[in-house]
Amino acid sequence: MSAATAAAVPGRSGGERGGPGPGGAGASSRIGWALTDSWTMTRRELAHWARQPVEVLVGLVFPVMLLLMFTYLAGGGRGVDGDPTEFLVPGMLALTMVFGLEGTMLAVTQDLGKGVIDRFRSMPMAPGAVLVGRSTADMLQSTAALAVMTGVGYAVGWRLHNGAAAALGAMGLLLLLRFAMLWVGILLAMVAGRPEMVSAVQILIWPVGFLSNVFAAPGSMPGWLGAVVEWNPMSATATAVRELFGNPGGATGSWAAEHAQLLAVLWPVAIVAVFFPLAVVKFARLSR
Image 1 (cartoon, rainbow, N blue to C red):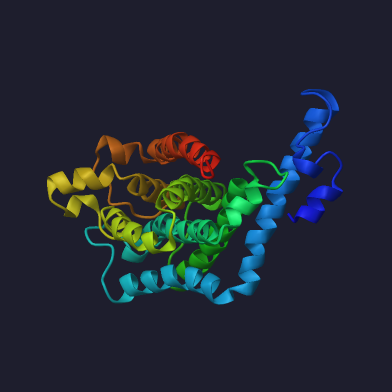
Image 2 (image 1 turned 30 degrees about the vertical axis):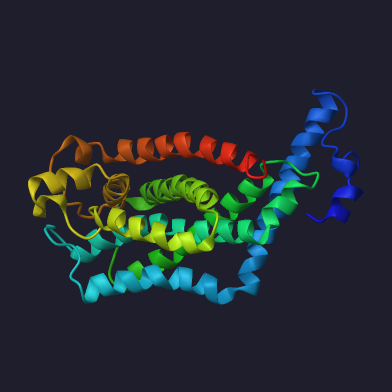
């Protein structure tokens, strides 16, 4: 939102944030302004898509390349009884939700480096609008990536077997994981402060991504490694969505494997419970 736009809104010029009193119309106005500010920040992020289409395209194509590589070249699905492609595609959907963290970090660190966030914070706008706008745009982009990956999965032979309701539940779990990871990315970006530090985080993301059951069943691994893999939050989501899609899961009969759908909810909720308040506090202290 520009300063001129803010000044044109009654009760917002000169740094004022509210109208009358904490209750009644004043509270309703503040909620309305907060929603308007958040949508303005979301539109700003979406406008970047039109100005930087190559960056958006790369974000959509990269997971597709990984899927095709592991389907046809690297032999994903080791240790699975059934079609390895039907094992691999749900895992790749989960991996795509986690790898999006890098894009979140890059966008936030670029805004920090250019002083954009400081300028927004100096305007008469809702304090959390920048974070809400960033998270909303990220979720929209993740939904688009999920749609692209689903289409490519169908093209390489992956199929759904449990109906539309179960499939929607699986998509919900994937987006829940993405929502949790984006708050990790927002916090890490504010801690790092510079786009150059994103590469250091990438070094950590890849081992976490591959230390999961995305590409191979835990039963095909050494016992201790399989146990670690099954308790990876991404493994819980991958196993849960395989169950909901009706795809082979390579389950070992462990507690984590048998309760994958429960863990696929608990892990993201726990991550949000930790990183969301930390991100809010860090954002509030940026200019202090």
